[in-house]
Length: 430
Image (cartoon, helix red, strand yellow):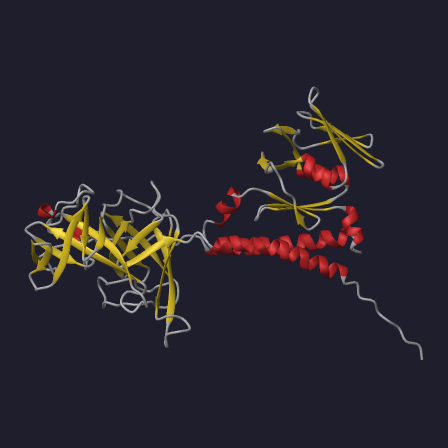
């Protein structure tokens, strides 16, 4: 009886794994609406025969063409590179191989044959850059462009052959992997399209009893405006890990403790809201209901119950946000406390005045029952920022009016860290 054996060539599979690992890292960019802009702002890298080249000069993209440093790439192929400064001519030599090109000319001579480049080589900071396609045309290497990373991938003919694969096999794998990533990228981009705008009502009108503080320096005899400060909530049992203390000092020696119920402090009307009278004596802030807090000013900074307070500044008129913000909290210590839990809530704002959120409600509700806590599923709608009030109008007709301000620790001219109701939201850079 004759037996036969069947040999399975695993080399293409190995290449597929390599290529998949290279390109899979690209998908990390697709997690939020800034993915395309983030990719565009990243330096182009070069992966040469499965190792990343160390470059002193980053590749550049001009007129839709990627230009890469000539010397490190060709020297990595074993080609000796020489530079004629006077004539600005680059030559490359190896066994059975010659190349010559001149900065400013799109003609190059390779083994006696003239090649025409899409862009002429250029000098950038003393480095000669050539079009990436010229690498393939002048050396026979397989070159692929991953715009989503962005990255130039180069396989030399000798490297492909040494691994028992063919150029056609590797090209097919690269093409399929790039097509898959393109499809996933486009799907992610489609999912990140902003919702259709809907009408957003004006926030409630206050009685005018609130006036914002106009200076960072505080005088306890003339308190005015809204102040906030944070304190750690170890264990997360009071505020989910971080408590935000808020005091709004109003005309007529009145104060509101905590976030106003109808949005920002400008919505306060003491005829309907829980305003308290207050007095300050001997370092003690005493409310009309008997609550007491220590109060002092050091170096012009207000401290209440030893919490450093900062003034709330009105938001810029017609402010539009264009980022994804997250709020993280917890209760109990994971692995230590029974029943411990943590949560991450996010809200994405778009410059067309719309938003997406993974919470059904973020705070008190106008036109519906008050609610606290998170609910599953994505919700969408439109928003308006007026003064220190964020109005969220949901697609189902529900409207929320929430306290809003930009934290003073945000980068100058930016809105990295914001307050929505009692929660601190920030742009997650990870």
